[in-house]
Image (cartoon, rainbow, N blue to C red; front, top):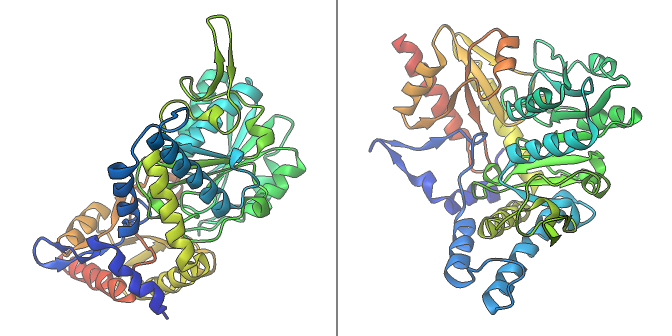
Length: 408
């Protein structure tokens, strides 16, 4: 059952009161793409723009000092959220995609050469494929792919077999943005470390839904996006162990990431600033910190319990629809994402017609074309849940699908 503290939080999200096409209340089920933002996040960012706006670091005047304090306090909030050992391990980026590209580029430059290998999986988002393919073109490295079962689980026996003397890094998703599969990342990290191989975890779809402790996971890098956890767009985080961040070169050059510059030689700044060239989005870091405070106040355990209850209810209700096919594992290993098809109805047609009923779902390949080919399909409809979604919205989705199905 839903808990009252969760349900009451809907009032913090004004957009959820929106009426679509002047007829239907908004049923927003596209949270895996981006979540809606609570008043507290928007108000905190507005407050900073109106009262404390100044470029951070190096400024000696009052506004710059205050903006810098807010920015670095936000870094400490992220550190606590991930239970990193130090704020030196928290790098602000534009999102998960940039974080993964940073690791691929910098780690690849420092530690990989032609013939070296990176292990990924069949369920990866394009950002965790293409970034390594760019290094493949530059350096001649090779991608090794962990296969999945028909119901969307990693074949761990095959994962173990992929390691050899050329394996340099594992880069894998915590939770599939299509299948909702929650991967056994602690085992993935343990096995990799037995071969002295570091691990990058794509946490875009896990950080909003469950507690993440990077020290407990043991991962070497972890990436997530602010906009998927009730924060602003254009801000994200890369956690990296200091031992690795110290050893890899900077991603970009410019202001802030330097210590001294001459035309003959440049020395780089200390961590984490070594990887933060240029003016950061210091207002967005405040918004991200406020979003993390927001979910922490509710409790990630409560959020996870609510969303698992909702996902189980949704899977049960959806299977009542004639012709329904749900992709991914059973509820025990299924996070708050459900990808489905109904009979021979094209996913785009289904999504378009659901929209006319005020129901927002995602359609297409979800930036996971290799996974779609593995499943033998072009795309799916995807409903994804957040802390503010309700069983009544699931019921509206099911009834909407039935109405659309009747048209075909």
